[in-house]
Image (cartoon, rainbow over all chains, first blue to last red; front, top):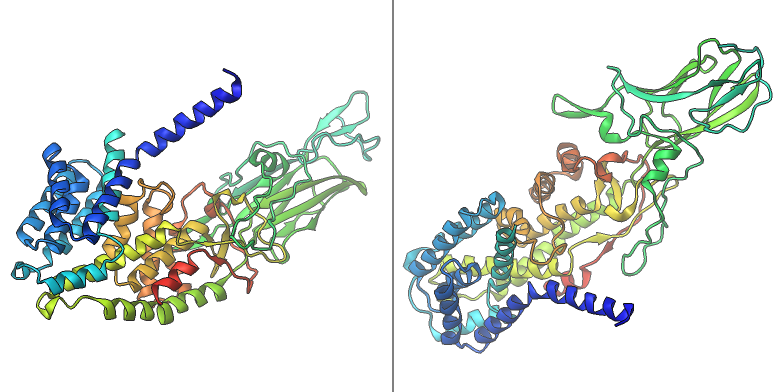
Length: 155
Length: 374
């Protein structure tokens, strides 16, 4: 094996290590957006539930779960419970800035009165779908949060 | 030590700032010029007080042109080279906060030769005009007092009418003031882009039957945040470098171009952060989300939203919020400009320029910003 080949292999290995950190989220984001845009609510909920069954503190899934119970199957009590779990977990990580950020997210979720917790009509669903026609609302935020936490946990 | 009335048979100075002069007598006697910089309390304010300087040195002055993609050719720059070429005085080392106001301290650049030398003459060959006073120019110990402008100062030393040495003092200088351009940008986002964005956002909002005001607000915020992440993803930056006749003559551009805004050095990242915060607020995004979000999220795509946030970054966000709340840029820079500058970065080291330019930067996300209002 000559030097150039070794160099190429080293570059490939390095690139695969770099990419592997984001690849799972890239794939998940695509899946979530596909389910949203095709109104495949059950698949979206299944994806979330599977991840939480595997890890109750799965930041990506908890963040999505909160949004799911706001934008898909409106249940604001469950949305609050999801953000509460996320908030509690984040507060154990000792990252003040991240905690302040999740504080803000939680405040926003709690600002939606529980009186609005009733099912969406089909026309409301269609409106939301048209408004977020580029993907599930908050999915990028969920990915970023999860990646940030992943980085923190590796430190 | 033996001295002569007239120096003679000088060799080429080996070390022209701490100039080595050789006198012919029974034995060579080595005399040195020491160049130091001290504040009023006698504290050193030079970044390289123990340097041995060998000019000439030309500070970095980048090309004025702004390439279409906003990429600036990075001139070759060696920190080691500058430390060896001139006495260096950073702005951060000669300012102090007095009753909540940043002020330039009094300080002296001191040129020192042995007292017994006669026929000494110090002179300033070049450098910013109207800045600093040369005192005791005909004495072995002279002072260049209180320079107030950044730039490269070149001095000469003669003894007995013979030019012996030149030496340099470098106060690295940021790019010229771009207030007119930057205020134009602020005005555009506050008065044109912001209202257009909000018109589009509100007109496309789902009504949700009119019975869900809380969700209505939540969805609006999520949409705006999604749009902001879209902008950040392609870098909500203003790139390029505006130059004047003498500025910048500062550090390398690897830490982003520094310009001056109302008498305060304004580095690339902090200037862009200000605009990010202003635009975010125009988009109706919650201030706390804007302030804490990029910090919480930046590890996903390192560099996408700038480097990891710290107190200086937060200060730049607060500056953007001030702009949103109609505080004039001049006041914002006076209140927060220096607080935004992390120490030991070139933004803090460089002196603000008193030149002004009508040049412009490159709005990197221009197409995407336009897309969001059309």
